[in-house]
Image 1: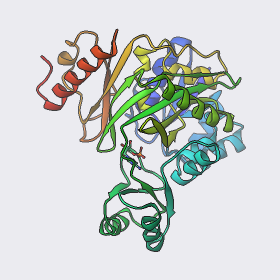
Image 2 (image 1 turned 60 degrees about the vertical axis):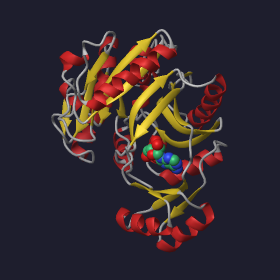
Image 3 (image 1 turned 120 degrees about the vertical axis):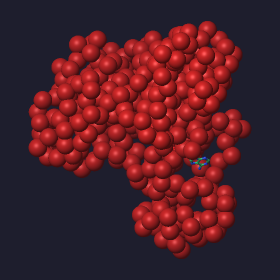
Length: 368
Ligand code: AMP
């Protein structure tokens, strides 16, 4: 049974690595021949919109999924229409996830709290949004933003003018800046049969818009229940199949939804070693209609992203219990090139070890 993956990044690579023990085969599509998933699975090399390659993918695969949020909705919809390809997660969820305004509207409709926001298509609307929502705020592109790209913190009307000019003549959204206490995410899987499982809540730390650290399980049981309820509403709404993630800000114990990701998520990488079944395996089980695996945490996990370059593996592997994932990418500043995970018997020990490791990685002095 072959699973098609549009996009061959690290998420596709980890999907393939999770699927081989289940007896699955993979076929990826990506413009970059050396892409991370292309190193472990067959790859069709070409544009995400290449009709000939999309047709091949549709014909050769039982189900087609994606590992990248900005895959063309139109291309996937054409694959479904013209070739009867089964696309999971649903294209409607992808389309919503690509547009911050559609996302906010859906949260509103389903009773999931969000920041206050306004759509901004002109300088006049921007000034109006500043008056309505106030300062400070965050001005973001509605589409194609990731890892903090396409957004600017606004502290004054002059900042807003500058950001408006810099972000270009594209649809924008202005949001209230939430002075959050922490950030969390909830990840769950729903299978084609409607079976649903939800992972323990993840606590996330970002810097310059990029995820640096995830710890799980995280936070009080009340947050877990709230987040799970919100996630279940979205899963039902889309008649979803696969993994879905919601990212939240937490302010005075209140969960405020920021965005969704209709795919396996960086904050779920800890599940490879830290949960009974990884998010990657459960995504595959879900889209193939197989029974879902337990999401139980096996301990207290910390996942640290390796940004820019992977430190010498001899040094990393000296750290007792450390699991290394090298995505096979070329080093480049700001790029996610790998991650490491620790699983500990207590939250206190996990936190101490994770902080120590982060300091050493940041100092670039290697790990003694
Ligand atoms: P996003 O691309 O929306 O996920 O934003 C990346 C990161 O920027 C978030 O994880 C937050 O750390 C920060 N951020 C984005 N929007 C806001 C906001 N409205 N208030 C406070 N922080 C934000």
